[in-house]
View 1 (tube, rainbow, N blue to C red):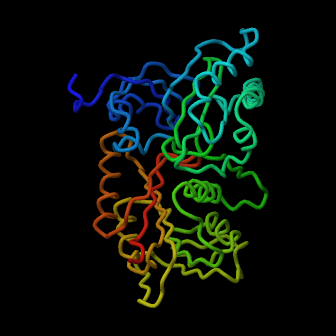
View 2 (view 1 turned 135 degrees about the vertical axis):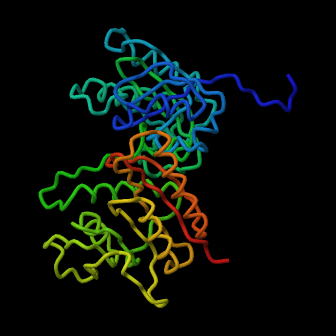
Length: 362
């Protein structure tokens, strides 16, 4: 083979697609240039793919919650395998110890399963495997302290067997095996599930840039009823919230909140009104929503952040969703907003979360 010819031998990859897009899984994998080999659990798929770069670079990548190259697999039913933990730990040590992973984290293929067997198994397997690796890896306990650009040894285990590989959290699309951290929304004082959605988005964003400092100024578009607003205020941020509908009464009198009950299109800040971040979770036509973000991005500070929920009401076809996604990406690029990432978060339904930033200071 010519040394300049890329190797297009199919490789095995593990991807996670939310159940809300299960009907589109074939189109999504085809959009990645791959083929489904097997479905694992409720949301995971083993695929064969010729160009792994498509996992991050194709339009279909926004559907993926998480991904991992499968460099070691043991298809089996662990519950029926005598000595599974010891055998699996020894195999992982032989395969990966000399590749110097920064950390080792193991999760379960079906995290929503009521049976705790595999959660316990994952914990026991990690504990035994770490006994074999270096003291530095064994001492690494904080999942979110990982260098997002350095390779971690990730492993998932379930009734279908064990699947593991090495990849950076950023390339895998999450610090945790399987994706981002689950954030509960069951607190009795929760205003809406949107609070958990922005909390997860900010957690995800830490893979790409430092978190905004307390006192940072947010412009929130489509704020009602105020779930995201409350989360931002709790983090010590100042929020200017815009919506035609009122905010929850529990937000009345909050000192760092300015609320304007009006249509976002009617909000016209002057040049002196600047913001460190824009958050948009508006309902309705995504084209109109991104146009308002673009208009108001002129009031962003240099290096300012944009978090945009791309909603797809009444759009269910794969090609239509891709066209909507591309429209939003093109509109942001035309306004000088640089793409940071795009993903499907735990609390996203038929929608995606897109991250942009304005040009930093020269």
